[in-house]
Image (cartoon, rainbow, N blue to C red; front, side, top):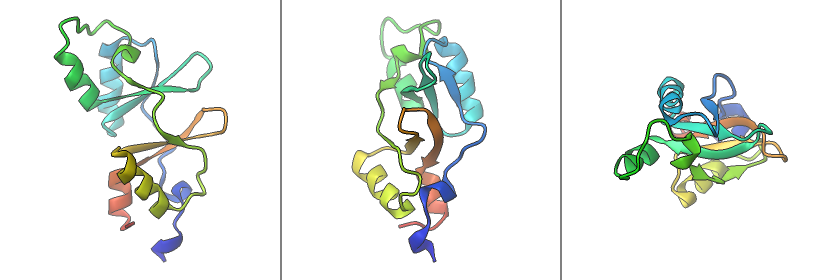
Length: 130
């Protein structure tokens, strides 16, 4: 039964932690904490995915001598993150991509780059996808 679970069946589409790429890091950290994904998604002025800012990105940024909470979130984010554009992809195939790319969060966008939802590694594990 779990063999034919699609990404769309498991992806989170509500209350996503999304901020504009020019949001001050301090504000982005608050949204990141509230989002409970360990990552905040950054969008550009066109509403398209511009980057991801993870807990790890922030920890690495703290080591930077020029670190500033007032800097734009995009300063410390990972630009152009790996995404998929097909929510009908099998969840087991999505897990394979997550493992291959060594990521925890897979962002699902439409063909123009607008965020449709996210699939977290923990969600796949909890659903028994392997």
